[in-house]
Image (tube, rainbow, N blue to C red; front, top):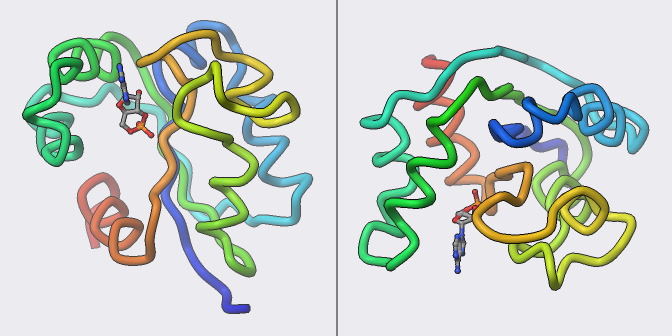
Length: 135
Ligand code: CMP
C-alpha cells in the first residue's frame, strides 16, 4: 500500500448530464482526497496528445470529437493505492462490460461515452497531471 496521486477527467457527457457532483462524491466517499479541480474545455491538440496511443484505432476521430465537444472537469485525487482504487470505482472501459455499482456501469451505455477517464499507472498519472495541470 502506498499513497498515490491519480488523474481523472470527468468527460463532456457527464458534465452535460450534471453528474459531476455524483461522480466526485463517489471518489470522496471512498476516502480519496481532491487535491486539484478544474473546469475547462480540452483543445483538440491536447486531446490528440493525451490519446496518442489510440491514434491508429478506428474510433480515434470519434474519441477526439467526444472529449473536446464540451466542458470537462479535471481532478487530481490522492489516497492509498489511488490509481487502482479509482479504476475500480470507474469500472471497465466498455459500459456494457462495466459492473453495476461502478460509475460506468451505473451511468453509461456505450463507447466512447464512458463518463470518466482515469490514469492506469503511476507513470501515466504523473504525465497526465503535468499535461493538464502543469508543474
Ligand atoms: P478512456 O479511459 O478515456 O481511454 C480511451 C478511450 O477511448 C476510452 O475511455 C473510450 O472513451 C474510448 N474507447 C475505447 N475503446 C473504444 C471503442 N472500441 N470504440 C469507441 N471508443 C472507444
